[in-house]
Length: 209
Ligand SMILES: C[S@@+](CC[C@H](N)C(=O)[O-])C[C@H]1O[C@@H](n2cnc3c(N)ncnc32)[C@H](O)[C@@H]1O
Ligand SMILES: Nc1nc2[nH]cc(C(=O)O)c2c(=O)[nH]1
Ligand code: SF4
Ligand SMILES: [Mg+2]
Image (cartoon, rainbow, N blue to C red; front, top):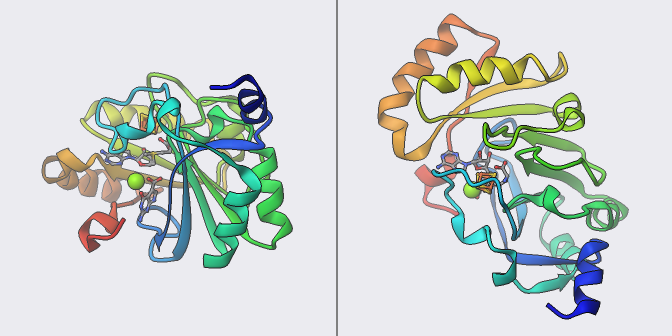
């Protein structure tokens, strides 16, 4: 990457943009809500079951002016979901300040593995064992969405739930490839521990992005 572009990316004035799409939020609290997704490239957390591994290498995604991303997003929806990759790899200040200036609701999907930047109306924290969330993201998350790949993840979910604030909504979401095995276990767990709710990747059942 050219030095001038790298400097703009470092300031969050350009971002490696993988894709943008208008769809229905499939997961968590806002499931069912129409939203425009901005998928920013770059992630080094390394979840072996990640459903968007093409996002990991930031170099594969074109550095794009943040102001252009904002202009386009504002044409499509009042609700914008910033995801990735791991959005907190980058400084989210410029992107979110400009989205807020347009009066939009700005949500993030994050592992919380990097310091919190940006102004968010809704923080969905999906913590990962390999790179644990920072204390600030845990404290400020509006929803905690733990992916259940195997039984060990129930214990991890409780450890992470102890770190979030008392108003944070708690979800368990089956890892997609293990859904047939883990959904019955999640159902049983949630009935026994009703502070938790079930989240499904409903967009995959609806065959939408
Ligand atoms: C692709 S990640 C991008 C945002 C951020 N890196 C994160 O992990 O939160 C978006 C959401 O999809 C979830 N996810 C990724 N792969 C999944 C899978 N195979 N099954 C279920 N959820 C998955 C993540 O845990 C996260 O909540
Ligand atoms: N429809 C839809 N809902 C989603 N919620 C979180 C997603 C993500 O990849 O961050 C996602 C996604 O990729 N598609
Ligand atoms: S943190 Fe998110 S984007 Fe990164 S590997 Fe894990 S699920 Fe994929
Ligand atoms: Mg997804």
